[in-house]
Amino acid sequence: MLCDECVERVRADGPWQVRRPLAAAARRGALIARHPELTTVNDTPAVVQLRGRADDRLVEIRLRIKLRRYSDERYIFHVEYPPSAPVLTAAGSALPGTLPGLLWWDSPTLTRTEVRWLRVAFRHLGKLDTMTALEHLVAVARSHDAGQPSGRGG
Image 1 (tube, rainbow, N blue to C red):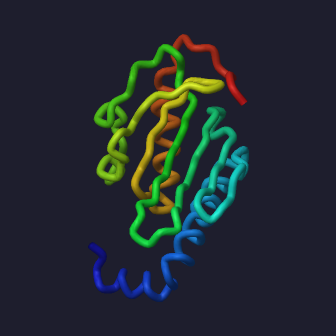
Image 2 (cartoon, one colour; image 1 turned 90 degrees about the vertical axis):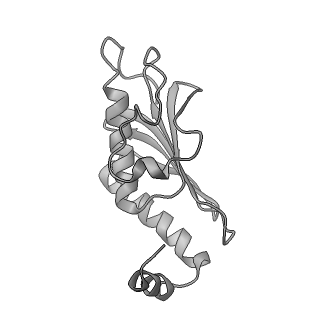
């Protein structure tokens, strides 16, 4: 629940149809400013998707901002994960601050396309939390790199 001051600030920023895309654009801008190798590969009213490298690790980020008033946003991070690294649990991810409470119910999971991905989804993240989540997940993936060949994917 928001405090009265926050409620007033949100209302002053306009209706949710305006706020959500602007918030996603701010998150995209912050991520690209910190990691210039990221590029926007999809930018629609429902999703902003980035792909590229963050600290020399292949990443893909989807900021789902569905345009229904009471639908949940979902922020999905895919981070290149070593093939022999163990399956990661929510507790094992050691997410900082309030991030564990924002995890989507089935996160984290592992998937595979051109690389093995650590996939972590959140219900909602503020701009700074988006940066923190990405950097933490990259660090977690990197911590399992011992003995792994580097520079895959891309």
